[in-house]
Structure formats: C-alpha cells, structure tokens
Image (cartoon, rainbow, N blue to C red; front, side):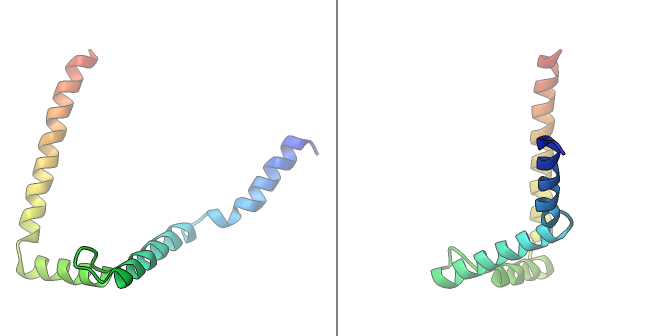
Length: 93
C-alpha cells in the first residue's frame, strides 16, 4: 500500500461520522442549545430565547400581519434581484 492509498483510507475511516443526517441534526441542536443558554444568561429583551421567538411567530402569523409583511419583503427581494440582474446582463455582453 502506498502512502497516498494509506492517507485516502485514513480519511475514509475518520470521516464516517461526518456523513449522513447526523451532522445536520447535531448542528441544529447545538445551535439551539447555545441560543437557549445565551438567552438564559443574558436575561435581556434584546436576546429572546428560541421558545419566545417561536411563540411570537405563531401569534403573529395567526393574529397579526406577519404573512402580509413576509409577502412585502419577498416582493422587495424579487425587485432587487430584477434590478441587479438587468444591470448585470448588459455589462456581461
């Protein structure tokens, strides 16, 4: 076995845990845990925890105008994309 083959085999053996959905699930769980702990220790209105944010989003989507505001935001993003695309295409030709 050559050195290159040995390194490739070592990479395959080490990287088995980095495949599949576990890395994605673990990263989301770790992010939520750090967010929760930071909000808990900060005790501030400027950094609400994930539970408060989810409750607010549910409340606003049911009784507020969250869906309308989301539509306006998406419209602005689409308009900005069209402006950027229309200015980039002529300069690329």
